[in-house]
Image (cartoon, rainbow, N blue to C red; front, top):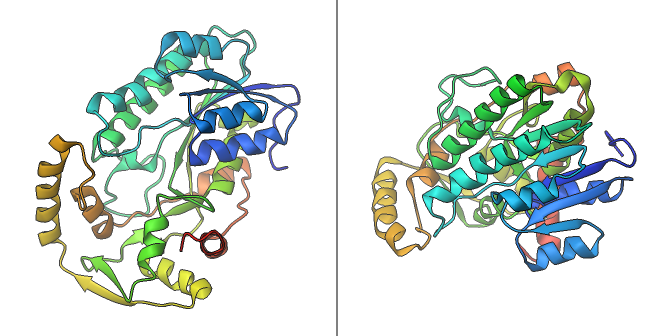
Length: 335
């Protein structure tokens, strides 16, 4: 087990029913620690309870739920996030990202012997990268409400921690993937089409992190003395392009589609129109501006700080991680 927590520690995980959170919980279950989670009632929360986690049912931004869950914990892993989905009201992003962070951090300062708060942010706080690769000190430029509230929460807890003497480490993950992930599944499904369309004519660089490596980074920064009050971008040592992703996928599926480059501008217009029509109806637009922008922007980061300062070791490369993931999709009937 890489980067184990001290035995008999008590750990609180938010977002434990999500892809990344559940992956972390499974690792913690293999350690001699007590696990608490905050989760809304669901089959996933019931499953966590059956596995031995102490589940506090409620909203992550409910003060009573948070205060009850935080009693006597040693570590907090704040992973919970409000993802961009149809029907999610704007104020939910502030509640899930900002209000919950404030409640958890303030509760942590009341815990005798509390060790560290691991706050999970996003590289999205940097927005569009004009001159890649970006690093932890690159300018901020959030491009939507999700990224804006993520940045607000991160800046708040960093400032609060310094003022209150709270031990905190911030992780900014690049795009998270791995077996069981559904968010990047659509790219690998598109790679099975006869033609793989790419909007625009840029490099379309993309930076990824395997969930195994990301959760290892969580555990490392939780205990490493040099991680206190620091920010780390977590991603593979190398970036890759969408074309690279398609080619690696083809090593597993045997199918290499034709790459078709098309102008992006008309799709931006179409995306704006779809959002205008769909948002009042609370339905997911078939195309939207942010998805179009995905194809027109390069996302590349310098991820060396985590390795150089803390000695972090990656388990997966882009190639080995993608191959494993695509194999899992095929074996489970997702492709």
